[in-house]
Length: 111
Length: 114
Image (cartoon, rainbow over all chains, first blue to last red; front, side, top):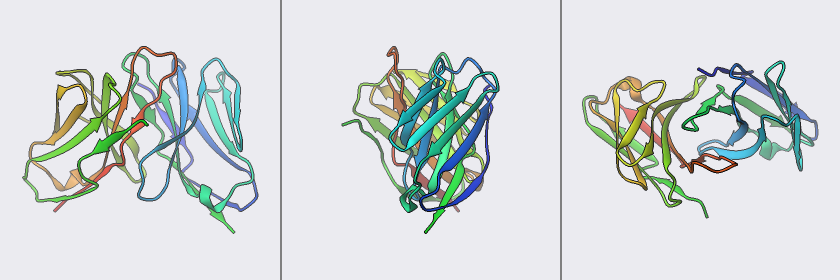
């Protein structure tokens, strides 16, 4: 089945850009997602990219997809303290639309 | 507005008890999912259901069962709770057959088994 890997921790200063990286194994994933989880809360969908796209931009968020290397990244421009959270990448498996998640990257933004 | 609700935010149970976690969605979605979330392990799929009375095992079904008697409700059952089932449990739902697919998550139930 799908395997998704992420680095576990990232620390940046307020105003800097953050880049969270993810690698996956299943090239048949139709959609790839980024979710955000704030402390004590459920998962919030941040953005997604369809597998035939290379890039998607949504306000401060930029998703890059390198299908050849099976690498997905999320860039957050002008990172704010409110962006501190755990970020999960996930690939959607064909068939029943199950998601395989990475272990999550904890982003810590310091003032 | 899309809504997935879970019956409890926090639950404390004793080892050996039978535990029911309830999930309800109001979006008429066909597919529903139960995940558990543990620090350093991310989210892992326990069971999912693609229709009423239909269920499929996920990656870690051992020690769990599920029930889907109505389309809007998906229950996770711990037949005999154990301490290694202490975790955050997240329910999700999705509609099938659309060009864009998104899973909607409930707020989670933090279960502690003592």
